Length: 124
Ligand SMILES: [Zn+2]
Image (cartoon, rainbow, N blue to C red):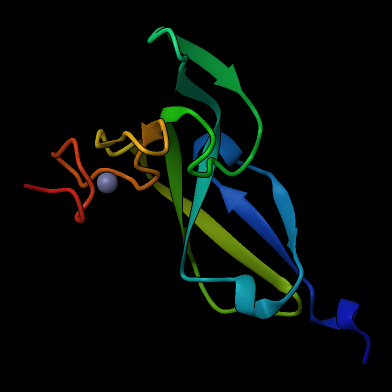
């Protein structure tokens, strides 16, 4: 069997990805819950101005993101014949921890906890 035999086509229902089919390289990638990050996101420039950005994929610590949306999808059943389906559940606003790391000249790269401006490490 080749690697390709393990790939799965995931179809998304509802929400912003309604009707989209995305290939997963392996069945182990078909987690019960998947968060799809929004195309648009907010960034804070060195001048403190907030800008709306688009695209760019994963928002790591060195990317000056401050918030974006994540669309939560749940698997509706087990993988069957290399196919799996996900149903939209909710939209979450992901905000960046507001702890300024002076030595690095940027904010902490973690997500803030819900209802807080800080991640669990910087929570006071
Ligand atoms: Zn933090």
